[in-house]
Image 1 (cartoon, rainbow, N blue to C red):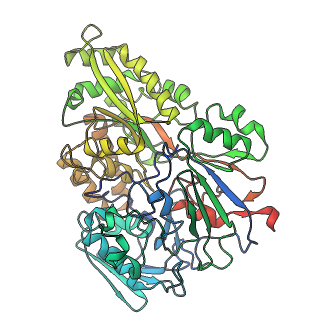
Image 2: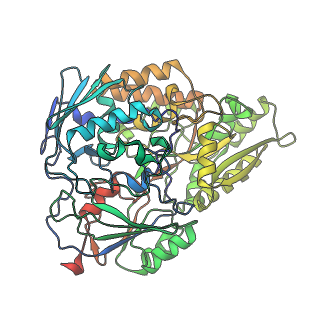
Image 3: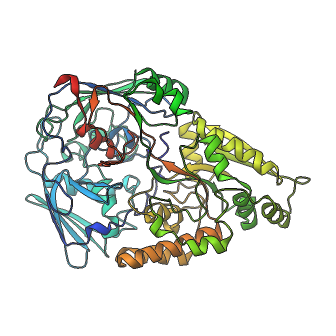
Length: 571
């Protein structure tokens, strides 16, 4: 499903840094070096235009026809497709970089300042020229309206200025900012100063409250038109990459639940899927030799316990829950084996196995909980906290309406927790209500999956850094459980300037606190769901060519995929 699509960030303070890019250790990156491409995304050569891509991705709601790239609720529809980043970073391919609106960059010696060379000859979709001033304006806009700063660049990252001169844009920070490269280079879509600087553009609203219904970007597509039931994207005639995009139209229907989305995928009506498909072999893959799937693990789906109020603030209760659930059973039944069981350390394996502190996981007692429950241990812990089947603990977990695999996961957990004395009620909520409750901390347990990134640092920092949190009733950017540990904060802060070996050690130490404090309870490994039909549309990412995260709900990767696709029948 689309669970990691949006950066589910609070409106008041944004996500803190996510990725430390070990591959960006050099001080200079000019187009074509360090994995970059001076000509942008497409590596397939020129293809004749034609073909339609139709997306099957259940969002649990109809479209609001809003495209503000700084809104957690709307970023899915706009980042990459319409508003492009400076550099694309591929989390699946050793942080390989592709130059987009920048053709290169240079760091100063202590990594406190980065200078981007801005791509010449680019125009906005309204025909106006794109310049370095647009880049500086975009980052300064995040300072002027902090609700737009989803990645806390002006606070956590220490951004102090954004300036433009000629064809260069310069970002200056208080401290080494290399850790934040993924955030400011890959995750921020550049917006046009000539529109976003005018108060009249926003119709009396502040930029963070603006829906941006008719977006003007540099990306390969324009919105034409949008309705509650479907977004139609058509090729941008002003796009800067020659002969791109080859796919001239993208249809994005709104699906309220998995079943109709999966039916359209299996019938061939849709050709790009991004959700859980039960019994995928018989329901989908067997229907056509042109149907395929590849869903790489990228992060965790976890129970987020409220650490500030209620029974879940008690460590023994969280430990009992973690011991009581059989993650393999949940994987097999709830996810049809398509999402592997997670482990309490929070380290995704095999993707990030080198970061796993195996010894600690063994001694913590949680090493075997991925394969079986320890009901006896769970009962003992819960009894010590004052609960038992005779005197049960009543808990409610929030989830999202229409996420059928999550419902199945939670049904298994409900049964397993009942055996030790926890009555679990599942509350399925609409997307908007769910994220509001998640961000404001108005829940006992929440079932959720963070986005992750190029290393485990991304997800762990999102989940554990105290600066990402907020008091109950105020929106947190991430760290929805409200975890605060100075030792973990210190380790995460050290990561930015540490050597590669030390970074692994730091991640291992941070993951040790996952087994000690149980700030969250990982359940299954969150994959980037991906199904595709290559009968006519060619150029999809694969395990042997992971040029982008493959699902259409991942941004800005979605743009990269579309720039590689083409219609065979149009050639």
